[in-house]
Amino acid sequence: LSRYACQLKSQGRFEEGLAAIRKAHALAPESARFTAEVGLHLHAARHYEEEMTMLMRAVRQDAGSADAWLHLGLGLARRSNFDAAIPALERADRISGASDQVRYWLNWARAKRNPGHVTS
Image 1 (cartoon, one colour):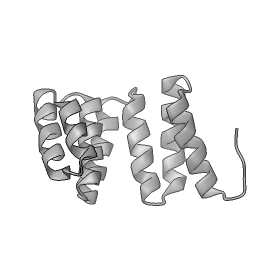
Image 2: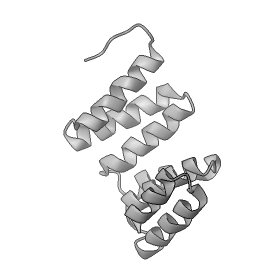
Image 3: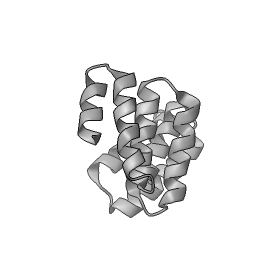
């Protein structure tokens, strides 16, 4: 269901993708990963308030989930709240063991917060 939901989202069928990921989440509501994915699909479908609720729920479900912290950080960054986004992304970075994907988004957020300041 998760792959199918992503496929629908990539085709611009955001509401259908959201419905599919909600079904996946209903099968495993305790999964921080699925909760965070619902948040991503809510963003794509322009349900912005509910998106942040789901992303916050994901980190409460599993504070050790790098995916949950990554997606929360990205949700905050999309709102230009870099002061809150960066700590969330730093937490994702620590948990993930400095994955390339997380490091990319962390450096991007730092650059957006401090234009002209280069990080490594």
